[in-house]
Length: 43
Image (cartoon, rainbow, N blue to C red):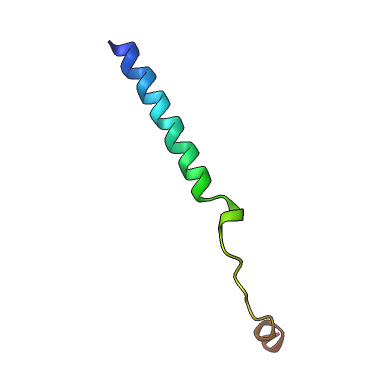
């Protein structure tokens, strides 16, 4: 019984890890357009 619980927990943690990897993957995030003029004027 404990072995089944351990196996289920391991599978759940792996699924959560894969889901968070998909969330934080860079190609799914929008590209933000930062104006570079502000950086040049401050320097």
